[in-house]
Each structure stands twice: as C-alpha cells, then as structure tokens.
Amino acid sequence: MGKNTISTFSLILLIAAVMFFFHVNREAEKRAAAQIEEIEQTSIVAEMPRPAATTTTTPKAPVSPTPSRQAELASGELQNLEQQLAQAQADLQVQRESVNQLATQSQSFTSRMPAALGSFDLNVLRSESQVQNALMEIDAYRNLEQQINRQAEDQMRIQNSAAQAQLAQIDESIRAQELQIRQTREDIMYWNQNFNDQTRRMAELQRLQEQLDALNQQRDLMLQQRLLIAAESLSAAQALQAGKQEALNDLQSNQANAQGNIESLRDSIIRLQQSQREIRNSQISLGSQLRQAQQALQSQETQVKSLETAVEQKRQELNSLVQ
Image (cartoon, rainbow, N blue to C red; front, side, top):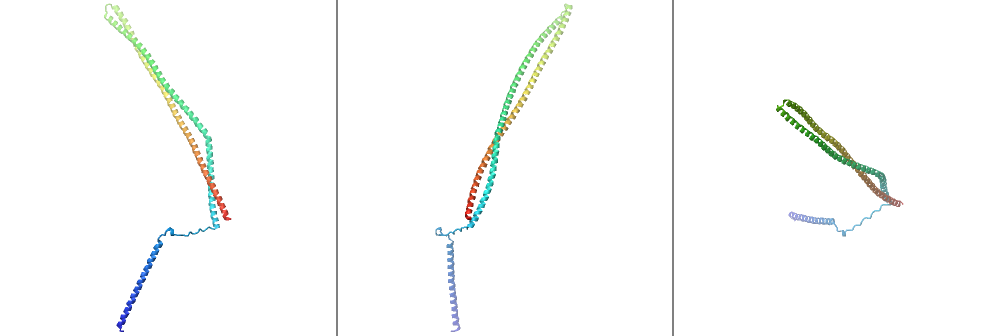
C-alpha cells in the first residue's frame, strides 16, 4: 500500500476511536444523571413524614439510679425539707407571739373599755343636762325681757297719764287765771274812761293794777310749773327708757353667754361621741386583727405539721435506703 492508503486508514481509525470514546462518555453521563436522580428521589422520600401508624419506636428503658445515688438524693431532699420546717417553725413562733400580744392588748382594751365608755356616757349626759339648763335659762331671759318691756310700757303709761293729768289741771288753772287777767284789764279800761268820781276812779285803778300784777305773777308761776311738770315727765320717761335698755342689755349679754355655753357643750358632746365611736372602732379593728392572726397561726401550724410529716417520711425513706 502506498502512503496515501496508510494515511486514510489511520484517519479512519482515529475517527472510530473518537466516536467510541464519545459514545462511552455519553453513556457514562446518562448513568451518572440517573444515579443523581435516584439519590434525589431517595432523599425526598426520606424527608417526607411517615404516618404514625407505620412508625414503631422502641422506648429506651430508664436507667435506675444506684442505691447510693438514691440515698444521696433522699438526703438532699430531707435537708431541704428540714430547712423549710425550721423556717416554718420560726415563722410559727413569731405568729404565736403576735397572737399573744394582740390577745393581751384586746383583753386589756376590753377590760378598760366599759369604764372609758361609762365615763364618756356620764360626761355626755352631764353635758346634755347642762345644755337643757342653759336652754331653760335662755327661755327665762326671754320671758324676763318680755316682762321688762311690759313693765316699762305700763310705767311709761302711768307716768304719762299722771303728767297729762297734772298738765291738764295746771292748764285749766292757767286758763282761769288768764280769764281773770282779761277781766281785770277790762275793769282797768273801764275806770280809765270813767271820770265821774275821780277819787274812786284812782282807788279802783290802783286796786285793779295791783290785782293785775298779782294775777300775771301767778300765771307766770303756773307756766313755770307747767314747764317743770313737762320736763319732769320727759326726764322720767328717759330714765325709764334708759333703765329698761340697761336691763335688756344685761339680759342679752346673759343670753349670749348662755348660748355660747350651749355651743361649747354641744361641741364637747360631739367630741365625746366621736371618742366613743373611735373606741368601739378600735375594739372592732383589734378584734379583726386578732382573728386574722389566729387564722394565720392555724394555717402556719397546719403547714408545720405537714412539713413534720414530710420530714418523718423522708427520714424513714432514707433509713430504708441506707439499710
């Protein structure tokens, strides 16, 4: 064969080898892809939750602690219970002391309360009696005030009547006196115009003039007496009014004092009654505190008994483990 034939044959072998390796590589890639897909399907199935009915799990058997470990645990629990019991017993002692103290206070308070309340009641009754007396005193002052006003009015009326009678009498005398004066003046005028008997004329004029002077003097005295009667009547009325006002002022002052005493007594009664309520409220509060403390004491005693029982049981358990 020539060189061309060898070259052609070599080329054919080379192409055949390339085709073979390409086919082998292709098959290998297909197998690898199939394996990968199978692995992925397997993973998906593994990750999917399985029904409970098809799941069977075998529980692990608990590991029982050794007797020494049980004794150690029981000892720790016993120590904890004993600590709780000691604290509960200490609290119980405190509560007993509190109950005893409250009971002593309540007994002392209760024993002293009747005397205190009795004293308050007595003071309230005494104050109320004093209030009634003060009210009666005020009523007496008011009655006396009315009596003073009536007496003053009566006395004023009597004085006015007497003064008016005196004035009426002296006015009558003055009118009579003035009538005589006018008559005397007319007689003097007559004799002044009568010249028949000169001697008698002169004598009558002298006598009438002397009579006129006397009548005028008497009238002036009557007028002065009338002024004196009016002044005395006015002075008596003013004195009576002043005396009445002074008496009324004294009564009003006494009434004000009595009213102030009443208000003070009523304030005292209110304070006494407030003190009574406070004492009763204190007794109720102290009794309530005592009952609450007794209930707390009973609860604490129950807790202590429960802890004592638990401690005893735990000791027996520990003894059985140790043996």
